[in-house]
Length: 133
Image (tube, rainbow, N blue to C red):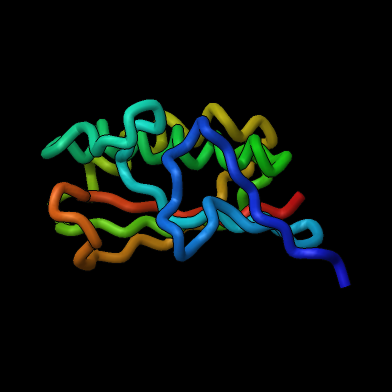
């Protein structure tokens, strides 16, 4: 069995003390759900703007992927959590602009989108990722 290791970077928001930013085991890297938090300040950003929040969230995921030795081209699954159905189109637009160019293989990750409540009031979107290296 391969060792399980925590993946951590200061280029993404610090995680709460009850989980890791990411966990790598063998060739799998799971990135914890990310919100729209600026890693430099630890503050939530882009309140009320799901498109901008989506971009910040994906930047945070990208930093954790990099720290774990992966890129978006290694991502096999992204799970998107939105607070409202009306936010789907602008989230999807920001998602396509960010993820597409980062997948030079031309194979986009699988994705699930769920509408639900999120932990913090200003959060409109949260995304987690699973990569295979």
